Amino acid sequence: MISLVSMLGTVIGTFGGILTSSKLTSFRLEQLEKKVDKHNNFASRMPVIEEQIKVINHRIDDLEREAKNYENH
Image (tube, rainbow, N blue to C red; front, side, top):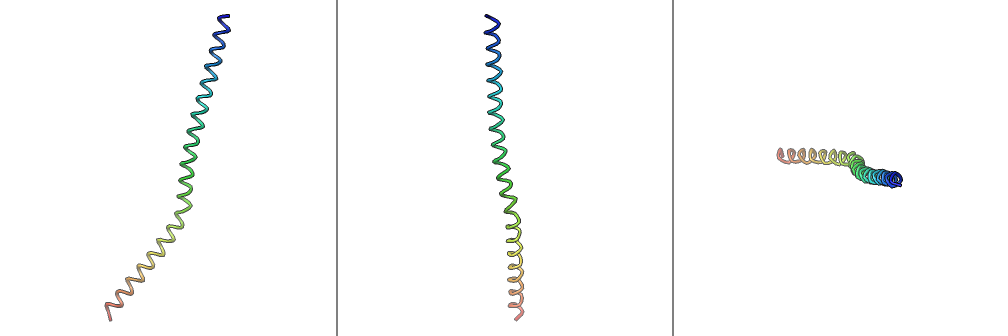
């Protein structure tokens, strides 16, 4: 009888530990997936931002050229 109660306690403890570990692993994976999603969103937006910066730089160059031409006249 004592050995059955002891075995039952061991089985319950083992499955409880497995369940707790599984929940923690699932939570940590979910958090990691959220971070990866943020990174992927940022990475997909970077080419758009880089193109906008190029356009802005060209516009600044044009304005500086116009300002020099205006000063020379």
